[in-house]
Amino acid sequence: MNVLNPDEVAPLGGLDLNLLVILRVLLDESSVTRTAQLLGSTQPTISRVLTHLRGAFDDPLLVRQGRSMILTPFAESLRDPLAQALASVEGLRQLGDFNPQTHRRHFRVVLPDLLDFGTLARICERTADTQRVTLTIMGVEGDALRGLLTQEVDLVVTDRPFEHADLRARAVHPSSGWSLLVGNNHPSERALTLDEWLEAKHIQLVPGGNPSASGLLDRYLRAQGLRRRVSMHVSYLSALPTILASTDLVCTLPTPPAAFVANTGIRMHPHPLEHEIPASSIWVSWHSRFQRDAGHRWLRRLVVDCLEETLRSLASSLPRKPDTDS
Image (cartoon, rainbow, N blue to C red; front, side, top):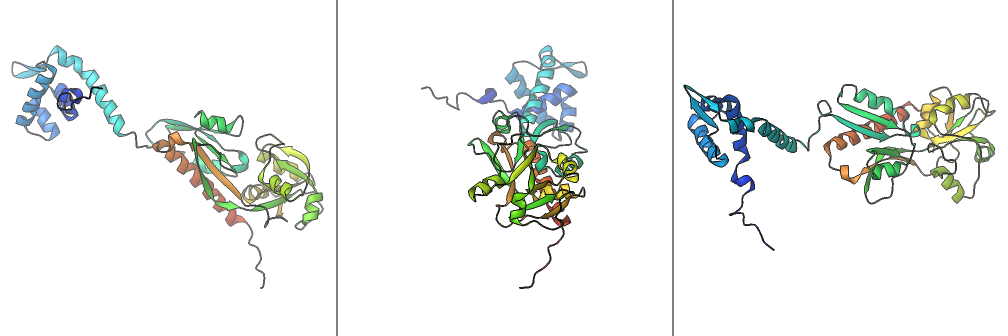
């Protein structure tokens, strides 16, 4: 195997990239004196650089005509390619930066409405002045996991992380417990007992549109040998207030979306299994390829911050539980 000797072969023929910056100014100004002034250098220094560049390109580059200097035809041909090359090099330096005010970027985010409960409104507020950044917010149509793996989707918000070696995830805090929503025609004005809850007619939210999909609550009930009676499935959160307002159905949800629905006037009670059902968590997942991408880091901070702000806001709006004497 032949190994290149750095003393024999130098990148760009040994030409310093900084000299190309000086060359660009020389080509723009056609003057050693003005180039020195613009770059804060001296005329002898720029003259020495011009001599070096003439040797590197084997062309005079600037020739005297009367009392001024003009570009040679070869120097004229360098102007546009040199400007493009220096712009590309500058772009390499800025790859680690992202400014949503100036960088153009389009992001695709899967955010089911069960995990929205006001978060999207906050995202819109935070991005109102980012004219060059656009967002596509999707529900759970299609395969979110496949979207992440094919990088057709930038970020997915779910109630549990995807288990795949190529994906990264982080939990959103705080996690939450569970609450019960009761239809306006339901006879009970108080919190339900476990037996009453099991015997009630349930409406179940299935964000993926698949009633057979197993959620955290159903997995817990199966493990305990408990069964409930589900009378209706709906695939989007916004349908619940209208349905609950005119029926005697009950609905179990993690507390944040339950509080969001309760703000429409639906009755909300503590769940009879609130201390037994595992806490509900929210996860944000992305492809590991974007782990260090500056724009993607901005997107992740935006979505996580808005989710956590919404969770804290909903938690603070809940009525305090009465203190009990020990």
